[in-house]
Image (cartoon, rainbow, N blue to C red; front, side, top):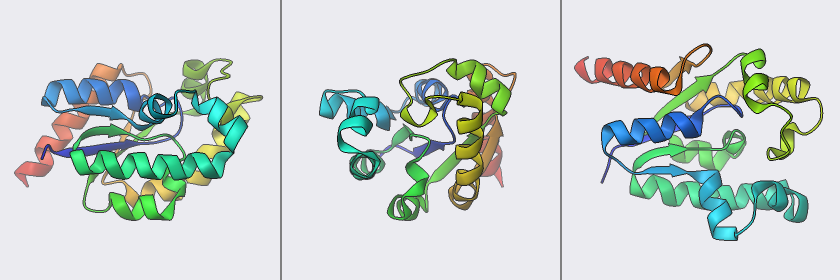
Amino acid sequence: MAETIVLIGPPAVGKSTVGATLARRLGVPFIDVDQLIEDREQRAISEIFATDGESLFRAMELDATLAALEGGGVIALGGGAVTNATLRAALRGHRVIWLRASVREAVQRVGATTTRPLLVGDVADRWTRLAQEREPLYAEVATMVVDTDHRTPAQVARSVLDRLSLQEVK
């Protein structure tokens, strides 16, 4: 089985972009759980939220994440995945990288989005609220924290790889 590295953090911190770069550099599969759900359901996350509600989406997310963890590789979770206690328990024993960004940087990355259902409206306020609410949950499961502000996805990936290498040496 391939090594498993899981990326967590609020929306727009670079989980999907950094994850794809990490997977390519490590030569392992990359799974974006949100994309996996969209592919399975043949509809956008925003549509799933609007039609079925957040609780059904979270159940889909748990199922998709558990399947992804079985296969290994680099896995990018949605920003709210950590709100599920069962999912947090499933992350124990895995390398879980918490990617962080400032509200200013995240808002610049998101723009006036409609594809992120929990950020529609006042993006800065909603992003800040979500990040603060989830911070203790990210901290609970993270084995490493990496700040992404003013860094390209390639720079963030390099930082993660360097820090993983240092952990292996210890």
